[in-house]
Image (cartoon, rainbow, N blue to C red; front, top):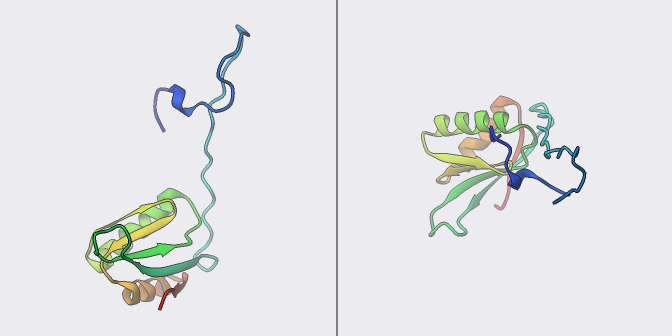
Length: 116
């Protein structure tokens, strides 16, 4: 997070007249990552808001952002393309549904191609 606590991370109380008041910053907790067999991932092709370019979208990941980033890095390297991950979704450039599905099954994830 940010080294110096700023006002934008505050929630709730805006002002207090109590001179001894210490504001508690909102602490975000990392969610525990489920095992690969418990994950239920959906793989679909997305072209919306991308100028007609195709993106393989993997949704349904439940876990920490570090585990999401490591899975994203593995999929990008195995497919040889770029991509990103945000909000528990992985975006891989291009149409790689079949290959990603086989990679995820090989790793032990429960995955399904959606939208066919």
